Image (cartoon, rainbow over all chains, first blue to last red; front, side, top):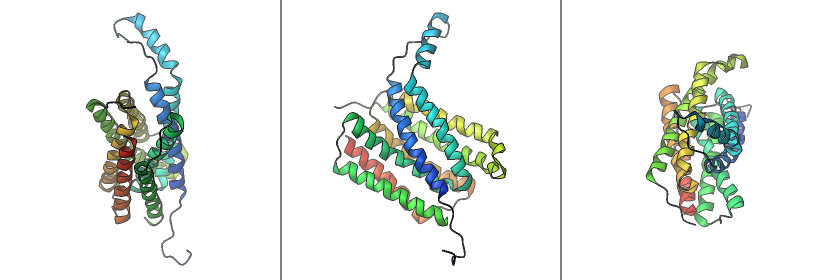
Length: 137
Length: 118
């Protein structure tokens, strides 16, 4: 490596985005739960409907967790983007999709099939190519 | 189990992914000053980027409220394609064959997982 005229870039931004994808998958599963949480109708002109809505929102823990993790992910992405290229780092976020599918299998008892397995292999390959491309880009 | 996915949900998730791609552009713009030190983390570009990034989850949540994640989630790949163009347009990052190839492989993979999820 020391003989190369151009020093390879650090892989750190890529690893940060890889971490982010695991968190993002958890956040999305949580948001899906949060979206089906009971929410009372709110009428802007009717103050009596405000409190039940706010109360339901503040006790919608899956949704709150989802947003909190998204905010943390934004911070991770910012620090990764500071040192890496947007065009190589951003598509790596697609790995989130792989985790969501694997988690869905565990949580909702979905079965693995040839399409899913092939698709997961393709996404992982694409991410690997981007990881490699980020070293020399 | 079979769940219908309405067109409005598809459009909401597409909107979310395009908003998210602009969020990434502003995060990248706002991340540049951080090279000089972490205290530069408070700047309007980052604030706007975070607002778009987190805000994009509003149409996403509205979209996934009705319909299947396995159908709606592949729409997010549109955001990756957009971001590749924005990187070239706003940051002059080269669009190379490995990047284009990887993007094509990823989108194909996401579509395959979608087919497998039906």
